[in-house]
Image (cartoon, rainbow, N blue to C red; front, side):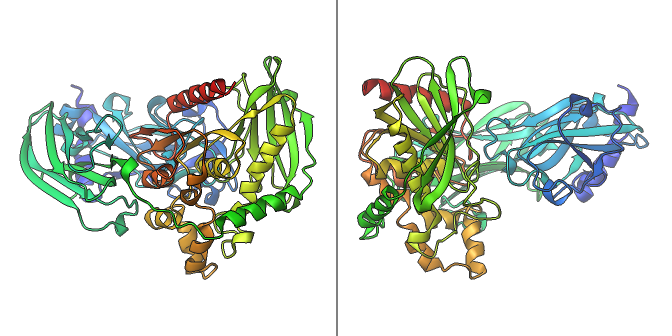
Amino acid sequence: MNTKNIFAWILFGLLAQEISGMPIKEGWRIQKGDDPAWSQPNFDDSAWKSITVGQPWEKGGLPKYDGYAWYRLKLTIPSTLDEKALAKKHQKLLLNLGKIDDVDTTFFNGVKVGATGDPRNPGNTWTQERKYTIPLNLIRWDNDNVIAVKVFDSDGNGGLHKGPYTLSAPDWHHFTKVKIGLGRGDGIYPNSKSAKLTAIIKNESLETLTGTVSWQVHDETWRIENRGPALSTKKTELSLKANHDTPVGHQFSPPAPGFYHVTCSFSKGKIGEIASQTMLIGFAPEEAERLPDTPEDMENFWSDAKAELAMVKPEFKMSPSPKHSTSEVNCHLVEMRSLGDILIRGWLQVPKKDGPHPALLRVPGYRSNMQPITLINDMVVLSLNIRGHGNSQDDISGKDVEFLVAGADKAQEYFYRGAFMDCLRGLDFMESRSEVDAQRLGITGGSQGGMLSLATAALDSRIILCAPDIPFVIDSFRAFDTTEWPGSIFRNGFKQNLIDRSTARNVLRYFDPKNLAGQIKCPVFMGVGLQDPVTPAPTNFAAYNQITAPKDYRVYPFAGHGLPGKHYFEQLAWIRKQFAQKR
């Protein structure tokens, strides 16, 4: 072995002991745009802007910017020290880039060493810590090395927003992985009385490890500081053979059907050295009780809103959009007036073959901008931007407005009263079109769009199918108390005395899908991200379990606030099947 390639390991060993790795926080540069040449170590980035990592790029020189940008860092790794044994074993460094908002592809000296997320569906990748390995043969000892990170941000804050940022030597816990079992395969155990929890501990190092396996089970709360005491614990001494998988187990009896955070870990006793995994696991979630707290005047409240909407002249308008049309589908920009005479817009796509066709209303996530969809050519699709979203901001701007608390001190003025009516107005528009089979109208959306889908299906019998994904703001105040975000929006409002908790709680009872879902009469197909900290799985089922119509769901055990692509193909197949049955 070339001794030059192992000289630096004492440096890294010492740094790992003292400051957990070689710090790489200083000296970064950034440039908007996307050019593959920017990954190469010999590229001249001297004209790029300096930026401090550990904060969103909006605070570091790219205000109000969404899209692609590249970060670059030059660093020298010395080869002036004695041989380090770990280099012979592992032949790699560990690069920690902290959390990146949203999607990244990372290069070291021009070679791709890792990537996280998909620009087409970023989900909650902004919450994931980026840890990539650097093979020793990529390192230019005593010379310039370049870390280049291509970042895509879909909306809101972006960039390398939270550290740590280190380059360090590996140790045993970097090669030991815990994989918790998934019950029936999706993280759900159908029996809520007792379950055998399982895990596999993978020792990929070259030595036998002796230590302690620990199990802990906590409640469903995502805010770690708010979790109650462990509901179940177990500790066992164990030896892990080198390059071997070891199964472990723990018997757990849930106090009630629902969801629980399960942690399995292995440690050798030294503080900070631990291999661990925590997962939210479900136990007979269809049996979990989250009883509605429906206001007595709920029916009259929404009857009044619909009557008020009916008094607003819709003033439907369509304009061809050749840019978004295809050989199979014509696209139009549409405009209409909704509750409060608010102007809203969307994109209507109509198959070129003869109709009438079934029609699908797509509704947006929080602050998102609905665009035409290219995946569907056999039904009419209206991608609607409710007030304050996308191209529907003429009368209500989404800039610097938190929709969740806008008007939350009075039900008649709450943002979502108008938003729900926007969805009904979208149905009015589709029903008015000769290309549309008004007997076959469906709705779908994710996150806030999931909430809008459930509410619209509950409030309007014209909907014959509802496909909500990771639905938002269900069992609202319990959800806010257990999540970092969006709960922080309300907590900040309370702290600043902008809204009163008791008043807001009562207002949201009119809008909570948990209290509306019992009115849904059409089939429902729901997608759930089991590790979603934004719209937690327990809240999804708080509404789902109130639905008495035919229903089904899919749980994705490792998904957060965003579902895998295969779900949308299965969802679309389900939508087509439902429409076909109503033909």
